[in-house]
Image 1 (spheres, rainbow, N blue to C red):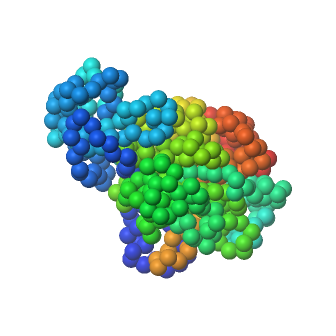
Image 2 (cartoon, helix red, strand yellow):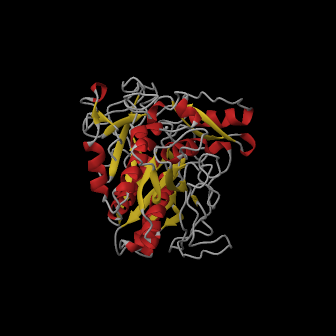
Image 3 (cartoon, rainbow, N blue to C red):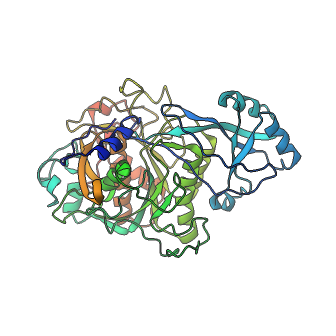
Length: 472
């Protein structure tokens, strides 16, 4: 959960936005969208109704047919659950990797798990699964750095100092403050791209000018800073409700050395928004589209996208989402994911015993991140796992950028594995800025090999240590 210490007066609208986040699991949020295409079964127009607190969208499942299943056979499959095709998810990345059929979002009056069970028994179905709901679980002269608040960016040799920070201050002192040529995707809520401390570090699409035409043919019209898969439009910032995505983005890449606010792990970096978490969270269907959107930008245009930040979680195993992460891995993109903030009791759980997704996917490009406090303890809320969580990073009491009412730029402190994750995503970008052409495996290995052994993480994560970017 988030703990919020906003330094500015908080009006009713901002409180409402904060409350909507407090129901989330790891300072996390939810998902929805795709390119609809016609199918032998009629496509119906229905909006998903996400029920707060539910594990999946009621009366919706995701289905992938086996190869060569067409026409009447597909209609017969759907008749078994009285199902209707709501959306065909066929991204350009799926097609590029040889999948010309995609995944189908099906509406059914049946109970979700009963429908999934029936579909799995059908010889024409490769897999069927619920449409799961996901939630969202800074030497600088910047104000919050100099006043001692930005402990997550400190090192044992910085001033102020904190040995349990990610040592970014030491990297900066050696001249490594990042590069705008390195790109990361933030798969989350939207983000305030015109925030005083973020302006200039967000991607502006040179391939698709705002003219009402899909100039680059990726299926998204005028995706100037990215795309909103929840709202199904190009508006990647919709006000104070996009606080989580803005906070995450600031930790990755708030401008440093400008004498104001905070500083990100990278003072210079390029961020692309893939907004899939809305007010009620997000779905697997939209998560797949968001991951594939970033992958497509890299493969289509050759963009130097090195990682995506995924400070969200919830639901169970999804083959469809894992396939999208695999496609990202094939495109040499890391998938940095929050380990999660425990269950309803708010106490961290062992992910080796109870899987947390997406951080528990075994794809080689996944980096799972736990949270530590400013004293080096594992945050009480943070999940852990000797084999399923890779490393720890600062996640308790993290100051970063926030959107204020009336379009103002503000700052505040949140806590969660959601806050730890962007420190690691930022580290991936910082490493890539001084090691151009590095593969996902090389970056991941460098991060894990440079961790500092930490007592609270011993036996709790693969590396047994905390993030250290001082050598990048």
